[in-house]
Image (cartoon, rainbow, N blue to C red; front, side, top):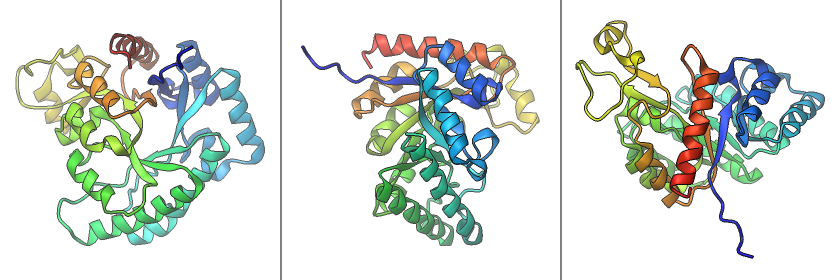
Length: 293
């Protein structure tokens, strides 16, 4: 018998369901996904509030629904650009890695701040903090996964190469690259492929003052670009397949890097996130089948 070829797995962010931890896990399971990601910086699984009993309960809820933790979200919303704050949040981040391991999970996603293109004091501060995190993650067999988006892939890759340790890796979010950095996911995955340990399945567009965006299927949410820009918005998240991420080129390119982990659906806006997540799960399942992912 030939061994089964590993394939990409579909996950969902618990918070996207807006139904609490147990409710979100149950809704995710009902959609047939394989895993869930949950915040560990706030909410029901906030690291400061977790006890052995709460850890056991969380594991029981996830496992009883036939799921696993694809990753924990360790984003405190502060980045690692301030040396005084770094003293606090580097240590808190290490505690989240410890929590992840207790939840049978090896990935913690986070934002580190925008990596400067030039070599300056901010970049040195970020490198020092990230090297500390990388060494710690290496020592326990886990990974901090930096979310893509604020900077282009080549700049992030150069920064990660400079750390001298492999414990800080990448949570690849194709929509963030499109919406914020103006980068192309199908190219960026080739640049960052050696670092990718987790991904977010999300879509969106960078807003431009134009009546139409060539080649995109734009939903009603994005009909009035100029009005949204006048409100101070620079980008717009959209349901999968309705934004600027070309999943027909991006996902095969991701597979070529050897990635066989989670495509975790993240829906941060929208009036009916459960319906959008259900649609996204079906969308991804079809792509996995179509491209033998």
